[in-house]
Length: 109
Image (tube, rainbow, N blue to C red):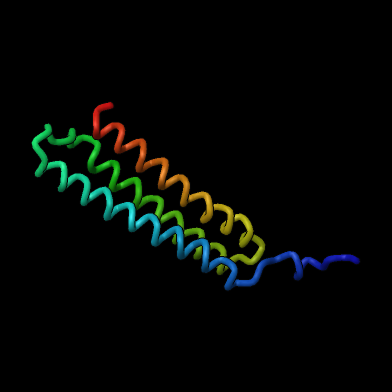
């Protein structure tokens, strides 16, 4: 059975779930970054090096922006929906990796 090009494209609602989850995940990680940096100021240990606090937060905002850009491209260009879908799903582990990397750099270990 032949598949027509119209059948190969994903429906617009297929892009909302991964992009929505990626945006929410990135914003949640921004909140985690802010809370961890505030919490470290109240502990008895030395405060984190401030040079990595801002890049940690900015990195998660960039990932949220990438998710929103993937959503816009996926909705406007039907042929790019699969690429936007994959991009949005990859933002989630990238955000977790960025959080772990920045925590290691902030912790000094």
